[in-house]
Image 1 (cartoon, rainbow, N blue to C red):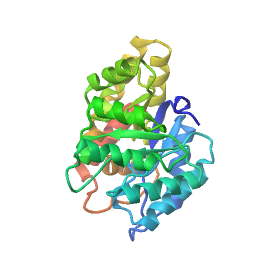
Image 2: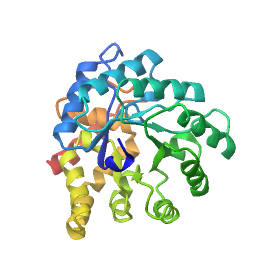
Image 3: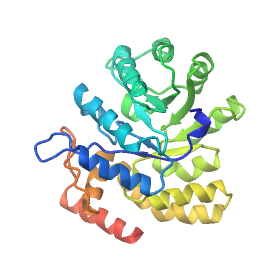
Image 4: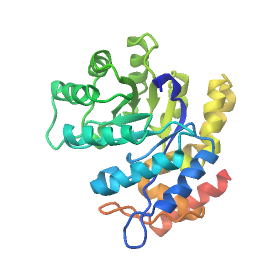
Length: 294
């Protein structure tokens, strides 16, 4: 599958746990069906929302394999394979490829501050041994690493299967620069909820977001309106959902999405420690927002 085929609303999945803290794969299945029925254009497991950083390797593989089986190629699946080491990232990427992933998402993360050369070699080492597309992911808020446009373009131009970029700095100018530097040929995707409208207007191919777990139809309507050039309609749709988008970001993706799913009938358990569940007042605020949007 080419990067150009991945577009629209890319829904991040949760990783549900039962009361004892073990994986709850049936609940994951329910949440995936909710996303697909809601109209998302692709599924992205094991990212920030999916608590991929808090899973054992056995749990990570179980979630990846289950998700790919459940989705069953109905929409593209982009598996987040990031790990502290290049070897770990490559192992996960190969696992995802072997089990049918359409693409993988790679975020450079490290205990030690990485140089640009180390980041470049990380992507090249993974790309050289993988046969599916890689979505380069820039998110300094979680990784502590902010890749410059120069570095991103160097990686894209040197590693054949790094064919798309997810930008989560919250700086719309990064997207403009990626568009200009690639002469409009590099697909880029928005990863910052409050930037969704601006990103689509700037030419983003898609929006990677946890919000479709709660309001898939509104998210998809926003994408459709911008795609069709209906900017007044898009603005109205965006501002209607913006309070919830801001709340999700402030409250933490796993915590807010799991609380929201519980409020709408899907029990996904608590986020894994050290993450905390929303408190009663936060749940009350979330319920009010959901009531306003349904």
